[in-house]
Length: 309
Ligand code: NDP
Ligand code: 1BO
Image (cartoon, rainbow, N blue to C red):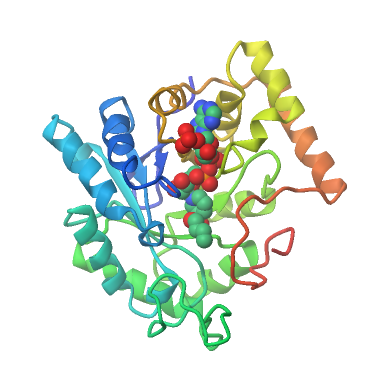
């Protein structure tokens, strides 16, 4: 059986699977969160940027009313790019929406600064309609503020998202606290092996986002995924989600559909032959220059990922 938890570099236990909430619409995300927590989920991944944290909070509250305990839920949220020079303000906003006095893990969403005083606090635009990005910015300064948050008790752990090896190499020499997690897009069509290996070497846990290929789960029709699913008599989604346990990565599929939420918890052990097939698929896409990134950062900045997006 795949492990149900991993241990972070601060000793904290983290569930191996959680529920994603990006693009979970208002009117559905409350019941998705509440349903998930009452049906075995112990981790919820959210973000200020998703503009649905009020409802995620309502979902948490509904689950608590049904007897789920706060201490049994691992809540993750992220500081959005307009708050990267004032991370505690960003965290306070999320805590208020979530109705919590602490989160278990607070992540830097992107190593980038968008105008904190712009026309919008999620996606500010310049007068010409382009993204209002502040280029005079050092992501290490954001990390220093993240480190200071630990003393407030408002988060138990801190980490990053969307950090390539290059960004981690810039950060780590200045870090007093090594990020507990790096949340990155990760699946067999974007194995990110260099980052995964580097994170493991440095004691940083990878949390894999868009494991099904994001909206609509397009990776569920990939040939080797279907083949392995047929062999085990499971759904392709189960194969994609089970890909991460042997890599010691946490995985956070999003769904607002009760039966999918439930079935996504049922991970299987992929055998050596399955893992070889998926590795060969990744290697082939890499060699052909056909890696598939489904979540393109809408910033036009080279973050140093393998495909230079
Ligand atoms: P996923 O890869 O999790 O795919 C979600 C899609 O797959 C939805 O359309 C969902 O539909 C569908 N789906 C889910 N389970 C099944 C199933 N068993 N069978 C068939 N279809 C299924 O995409 P996300 O991009 O949402 O990634 C997951 C989470 O990762 C996000 O929600 C977010 O929390 C996080 N994330 C973080 C990012 C970052 O920058 N840090 C970036 C992107 C994501 P439906 O909901 O209708 O059931
Ligand atoms: C800009 C997309 C963020 C998803 O986490």
